[in-house]
Amino acid sequence: MASPLTFILGGAASGKSHFAEQVVLSQGEHPLYIATAQAYDAEMQAKIDAHVASRGPRWTTVEAPLDLAEALANAPTDRNILIDCMTLWLTNLMIAGHDLEQSREALMSALSARRGPVTLVSNEVGQGIVPDNALARRFRDAQGRLNIRLAAEADCVVQVVAGLPNLLKGQLS
Image (cartoon, rainbow, N blue to C red; front, top):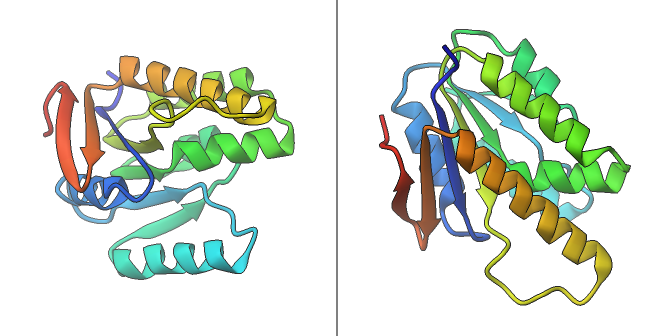
């Protein structure tokens, strides 16, 4: 049987990462944080540093900006996993010119093979205006398709708005 999969999404700075951390901490000791962010500038590096500092020493962090499926497959089986975030992962794939469908399918396969809880964080990007350029529209559409696929596979889906969790599917364990 595959692992319980929790999918948490929300807008930028909505509180979704903090909420996801609390969910994973409630599942047991020694959580594993698979981080997808890359620091392309000082502002992003400061944001990453603040996230790491706020998590504290209980967390082990694995950096996986591109090969998320491999990081998930290689993660210790006794760890509860938080992957943050799918939006940055997708961005990294697009910037690097990777095949999005192939990468998504590899991730879905790794998720279905996983034993133990996995919590995913993603941005909801479809509630704004239509982007004014082709790349931004391609990204929005790809993120929407990824979110739909993850939500369909997840046992539990939660949308976080202004720090408040709204249960959309299943129940939190």
